[in-house]
Amino acid sequence: MKKIWKKRKNSEAVSPVIATILMVAITVVLAAVLYVMVMGFGTTGNQTPTGSFVGNPSTLNTSADQLTFGVVTPSTTWVSCKFTVTGAGGVSSTPVALTLASGASTQIVAATVGGATYKMVITDLAADGKISTGDYVTVLSYVGAVLTPYTAATTYTVTLLFTSTGGSITSQSWTP
Figure 1 (cartoon, rainbow, N blue to C red):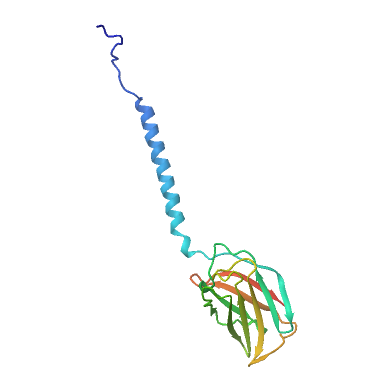
Figure 2 (tube, rainbow, N blue to C red):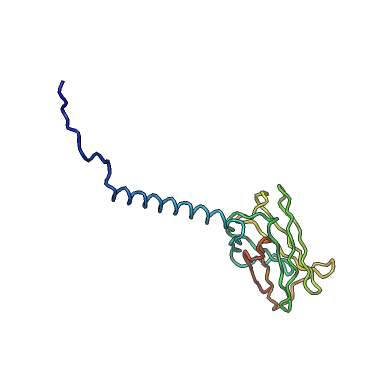
C-alpha cells in the first residue's frame, strides 16, 4: 500500500512568536484575576459602612423625636455600632454601645450630656439584629428621671458610629 500524504519537514504546530504572545497574555490575565481577588478580600472588615437617616426627624412631642433609617450598606448589625448625642453647647456624649439581642425589637440606651440624659429607644422592625430601611430611633430628653422638653433653639445631633473603625455611618441634626 502506498502512503497518500507526505511527511512535512517543519512539523511545529504554532510558530514560536505566537506561542510567546499566548503565554504572556495568559500570565497577565491570571495576575489580574489574582490581584482583584486579593484586593477584594483584604478590605472587607476595615471599612465603615455608609448609611443615612431619611428626611427630617419626626417630632413626637416636646421631649421626643424619631429618626428613621434609610439604607445602610453593607448590611450592619446593631451590636457593631455605637451612638453619640450632641446637645446644648455642642457637647457630645461618650459613645454608647448597643446590645440589641437577636430577636428583640427594641432596646433603650442612655447617653448623658451635661445635666441631661437622652434615652434612645431603638426599634428594629424586622427583629433580625440588623439596621434596615425603616428601623428608627426615638430620642427622649430627661433631666433626672423626669421626661423634659428639649432646650429651645438648640441643635441636637445623633451620630451612629461603626465600632471597629470608629467612623461615622450617619448623623442627623435637628433643632426643636
